[in-house]
Length: 204
Image 1 (cartoon, one colour):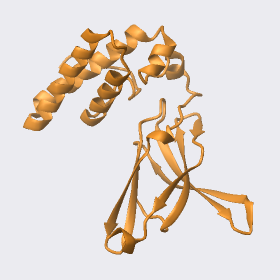
Image 2 (tube, rainbow, N blue to C red; image 1 turned 180 degrees about the vertical axis):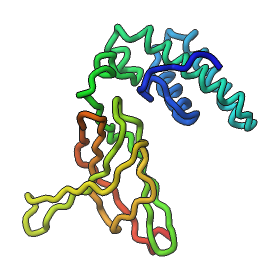
Image 3 (cartoon, helix red, strand yellow; image 1 turned 120 degrees about the horizontal axis):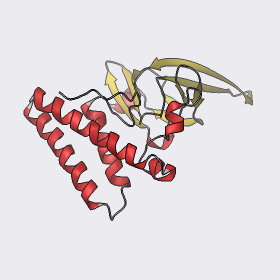
Image 4 (spheres, helix red, strand yellow; image 1 turned 30 degrees about the vertical axis):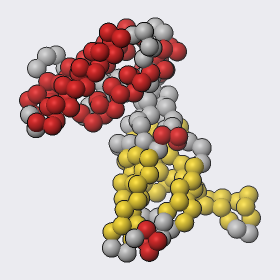
């Protein structure tokens, strides 16, 4: 193995094969049409990683993972003076990476919701892309009072260190949620968004 990569930002250096595949695909989708050589490099690295996973070759997966990480870091380093281009590729700026008092907000347009049945209960999972500089995430539930729609209560109900809230048990019906992203110094929270949790009987 080569020298470790010392950048603690998963949007620049994803740390799992799955996240590497996602980031490569995101960068590919954002690349300018004229950047065919870099697109070809990314596609080759992605295929190498996919093949290693398909064959179950752990050594090849580790090598492909590091190759992909190094390529993403190289793209970041060669682009970091162009802040709009960095943002288009899904990278935070160098100033944001170094600023302990800044953390990105989860993009609520990219939240995926899955419902599963466990016995007589519906479990809901929410996954989403990482927020830059975030070390953990809190899921909040918001409730409004029928007697006074202006009055609301907001409760943090679950914390996770990865961008996934798995098998959450909600009361069936419309649920109003927010997600707070946090690092060691500060936090940022999304606007309210709504999910519809099915009743167990209607979901069968």
